[in-house]
Image (cartoon, rainbow, N blue to C red; front, side, top):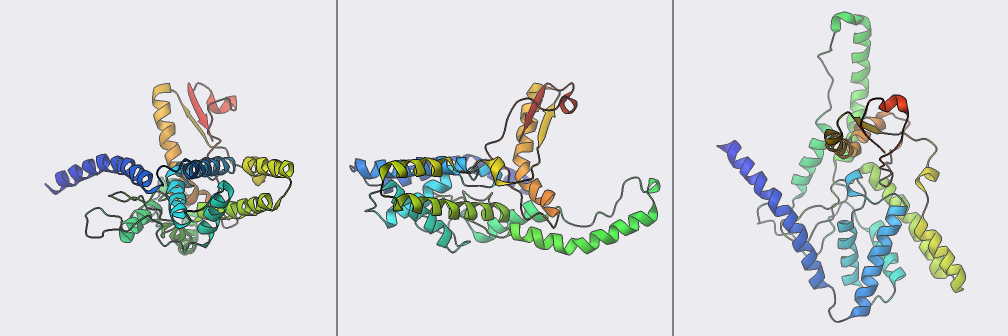
Length: 316
């Protein structure tokens, strides 16, 4: 009976949450000034420009743990409500940057308040539990080795000792990701954290990129000559190409024999990349963080030896 009730509750929540997103958009629309086309135009232009800038700088994409359109909309709306007389697109973007950098994260960023008395309202402990499940549930020494007889027992003993030595440091590393990072809450009930996927590494990348974006924006605002300002603005919007950010890269390739199954499987792989990079790749002490480019997902050619006989292929 309990299992049936839990399943029914989860199914109902699965239908309610998408409606919450739609209702949040309606709430935000009502909060913006009416019959003031110029102010609405500034708001929309700022949001579009921010999205383009974030995409060009490889920090846009909720699936990979970066900023989403919803998160940026909520933050920009809050800033617009705090500074209703803002009359410039660049000024409101400047304030967006400053607010992000000076906000006391992980203090929740929201429009309005949270009613804790309502069931399924957003709660810190609920989000923390979900994050711990994501990053800490796979930890522990594996006691059951496969094919023990085929292994050298002395080697196995050494490996276990090494794992135990590294265990503490690895858990401490993953605990950074499992903590509350950047809760940006949707305004409609039931509230959701639109930035739940942001982790310790992606937050570091977002902050550094916004610092650089603010620096570039200030240069634009300090220029007097329109021609120079336009060129600098184009350069700022274009951002830094992902391949120019780093010296070392890893290509993740997904291939499948069946094209129909391959699409679904590669979507599953795509959903796991954000977590697996933290669990596996960042385990190496010399690696400060990993940064997947949200814009680099492609269907195309790759080495023949990797895709021989495969009808479906996708790589990041």
